Length: 127
Image (cartoon, one colour):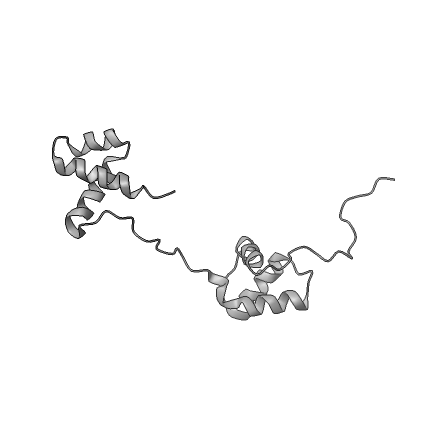
């Protein structure tokens, strides 16, 4: 979700500061929720600014410290499955890894997760 514009924030605070309307009326006028108006007003009173807060960064990646081990395992066995790769990381580093987590990590490392092209096609041939 995108942050509200600085202009909208300042207009909302100006309307609340003017005192002609209640916070709920100001929220309805500008198309924001009442809790948003309350939050901006509280921030304005305490800091003097209603600017958007910087992004907090999110949760750190669990497998970020194991890129060398993952690369080595894929180089050693190019046709390793996601489940086997997860098991390898869990056994070697005591870090639980799910197949979806491993798939995202392989994409970040730009490593293929396909089996080798020299294997036979898994579809059944009809004769």
